Image 1 (cartoon, one colour):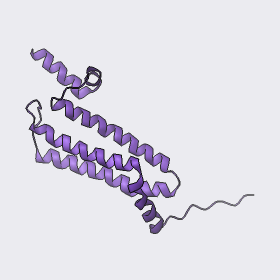
Image 2 (cartoon, helix red, strand yellow):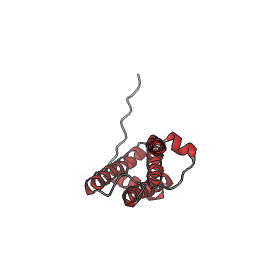
Image 3 (tube, rainbow, N blue to C red):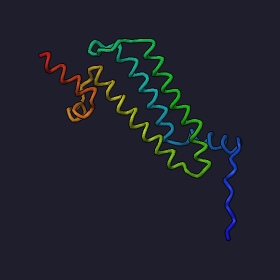
Image 4 (cartoon, helix red, strand yellow):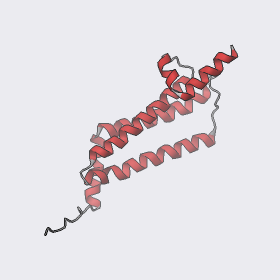
Length: 138
């Protein structure tokens, strides 16, 4: 017979120590920076004439809430998962969202009219639809 192993005890202090290490994590720092860049490009695209979207407080508030919730989930759960010894999986979570926000930033830049390589615009649906519409108007 074997003795069952007990689950690791994770108290507030263990979580706090792991949370303090977040600032040293390059993935987390990149995650926060890319969220801020996405917020800025999302806001700025409403001021460009080439954009069909205009500045809208409701849309901005919804985006801000969405980004805050995602960042909050990372701030709360990353230290917990790190305490379990699964920091690599938490880093995968951050990498996934870094990629998603990166796509959003590129879409925002394309909507602003900033020239992007064709292979990017052909593979991003928002930009492909936009270029298809502009070609039919010519």
